[in-house]
Length: 477
Image (tube, rainbow, N blue to C red; front, top):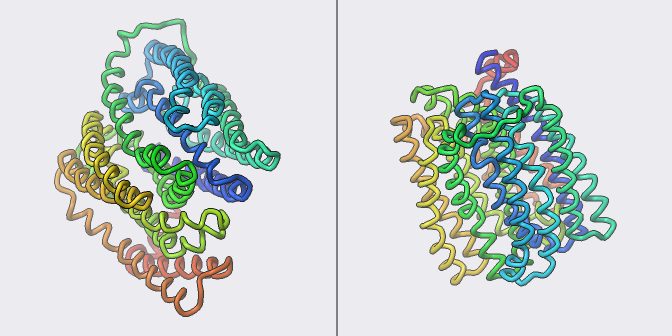
């Protein structure tokens, strides 16, 4: 199968799974938000913060090195497998015994048992990680898609049942634990055809992977702090309830890019890893950005216009203070659409150190910015600081991309100007509808979604993508 056909096939399966799991998770959040207090979401957000930090160490960065190096040596994979199991047990133990420190930092006693229960998932995650790596490396996107859908269904059913039976924050924690257990079993069962571990363990054999992973691991740690610094500051200095409001706003504002972008990156990275020429990588980057912006910009623009009504409609009046946060965070999402593929280009050229230094620079800018903005303007100041630092990061990434593949900015601007213009026209039409007709209630939301979609699609068909091109693409699928 050619790279293009593999990409199209992978995109179909991954997109289908992502659409289904997005609908499921979005529905789950909308349902339990009417049962659980905002403070519970803040509590779970802090727990997720701790877990996500330790998850960075999964496979010591082997996830991308296995794909980048197209590793298939059974002895090396066996060494990685056993290293991961040991690492999972160590990390699970560290999380379990660090719960007291987290409780002391946030002054929230309930975090103790929440974190200790969640720590049980880590041995499972680390054991199955290599099978996920190999399934992705071999472009087995259908298998990964089916697993995601099955686990997503289990997660939403269990969470809703437990939430309505008074389990509070444990409704989310228990369902996540079951989700991890089922996914681990499926990864191992369906991935064993690609790899069965042998009784072999020699760390010296994986030194190249370790060398690759050191920078990737460092980038992951810095990236984690960079991404979650707002949560750390809000939870500590402003309050758990405010963190819950921010969590809801963040999830709504970034859900299009954190659902669609991973589809593109998951499918494109294993293929880009096979490319080594600058022109090929440049074309791949521009095509990915073009696709991501065309799909995401109308969603983000629509969210910007309708967020005030949408937040109350979906989550209830307890979360209405999240709406102003959504409008600002959306600008971070706009920039993330443009910068997301840069990391794949850097990894494809075996240069994880570039993203490490990128995150380091970004963090140096972000820490003082968020501190002073929080002091001056509170919660909204943190959000504005987040936008400013994202802008700085985007500018630096443009220079990084130029150093990796050569001059690209002129072509980039030609690609992006139409999606921006089309999204702007759509916003003006929707604002006109709200002014002259109305914006409150489900009916007005549905009409605005349909109206915005018609305007944007009409502009795309008129000025960017003809019906003939769409039909040719459909035949290729």
